[in-house]
Amino acid sequence: MKFVSVRDLRGKSAQVWKELPEEREMIITSNGRPIAILAAISEANLEESLAAFRRARAVEAVASLQRRSVEQGADGITLDEINAEIGAVRKERAR
Image (tube, rainbow, N blue to C red):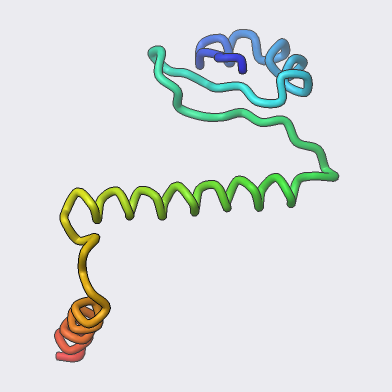
């Protein structure tokens, strides 16, 4: 996988676009840190690629929520406790 700085992306964009189909993905960096993924797609696989990207983001969001619940000690909450919390919030919103 190739890493490309924002500076190189600006200054050598024609070269980046030329190499992208062969590389398939490139990581865009700013100050040495990854900030974006540049992926080659075509009209034929646009919808499939977009759906896969969205699924991957959803999986990461769920994993992040799970990590935070473990960190906060909320991973051991029972279903009854969850339902009680939902009920309390709904009751408060109804006021």
